[in-house]
Length: 426
Image (cartoon, rainbow, N blue to C red):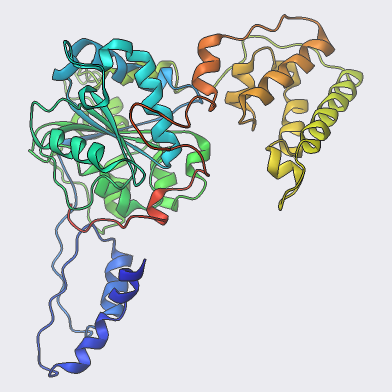
């Protein structure tokens, strides 16, 4: 960004002032590495004095879960909460890594809530929805709507699906849940966005929901946070050179500490509930897909299956009249899914298993593979759940005429790399 480049030249201003002029640099949510970089860019003397404050927010409970391609299991708790509490539902910000994901979630919630997506007794128009979207393509009037409603306790909009565009220079006091559908790339951005919950000091919750693909371009510490079974708060704070305070009760800290909490008198495990309905996900959507059955697969079967897969691969490639990348990259059906299908053929009986356990990312590819396996082994009938098809297909998530604005499509990169900059006030 242009102004970031200008910041890198601020140190040159020191040549215009007397050598004894004191210099004060202020920032927020900066890791130790970032602080050293700032000192270098500003040409600060080696005898500079640093004052730091821990970014820890003790009132925010940290929760995380690995989820599958389906939206129903990870977000069912939030849909249920909207249905039951409606305009009294706690305020929620759902951060997405891409504009496309914002639109996908917005339409999924809109379809799931049906008439309940609107305020009772009000006209069925976007202004009266209890959900909204906020990203750089959103119409200005809808951005203003979300900001205005989130600043007041009784605002109509209760859930906002947003990129990091929602957060620059704003401070909502009463957000109870910050949900990340895929984490930001850096720990700094992650901590900033988590910190938008519970600004009023009341108990709030940070929820990280992620798939494996969400972690591919993240910093090492972010990946560690997603995969670790140790204290999540300690992982985040370690990047800032501070430790977790001793006065945080285990069941108020994070999911990992909560599961080990022994705060009752007889030293048995804590009986305090996880502070959100999503905990049911821990025994359902979060767990890896364990095949209920398997078949014997012979060498002949694998040869026939590979032949069908290669034919399908060629058929997809022939539908690409021109491309800059290889046909496999363009179609999304490379040698990787072919090899994975062959190695897991004994377990393939449903399209859910294919999409959740194999490197297959398009619903139509999963269905095609399922039919091939059924043709070869003839030990099951292909039966596609329409509800699952709806939550995994992208075809319905490109444009919403009522809400306004095209949010579909191009890539899955974080908007933070292209249009917005991280805020400096946490």
